[in-house]
Length: 198
Image (tube, rainbow, N blue to C red; front, side):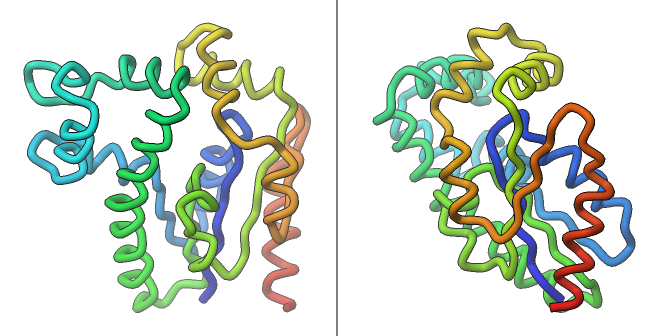
């Protein structure tokens, strides 16, 4: 059994690739973003840590995080982004490692970890293989706008706080260039076959 890390910037196609892999019987998915959202519930220690750092003004009256307000802040303030990431790494990474440990007892071929901040959170140390997805900026912006129903400026702001392609290329075992006509299913099958051979 091997742990495969999948990473890349917003709009590169991580979710689509994970959905393809999720159809396989011998694969279990750990979605870092989903775990983060699940932990963002009122009363959770992760959310309390965010409140203690950023203040009540980032929360609705019902105790839920105002994601839009937080996004606006971290897109324009690198120190705020760093603070939020550090909180996320402390809480979410711990949960991810618990999930990896739990799944290692299952009889499966691959654990797939879908994590945008895989390298930043130090999660690559727990992966046997890392695959990064790369895509053209215009295509990423279109995907982000369509998926999240946001305007181009906000999509660009999101990409501007993320790493460039070279960052992923030099740290990964495999790269998938997810262009417009890329057959992701075919690309991942080739990579899985190579992993099995090795």
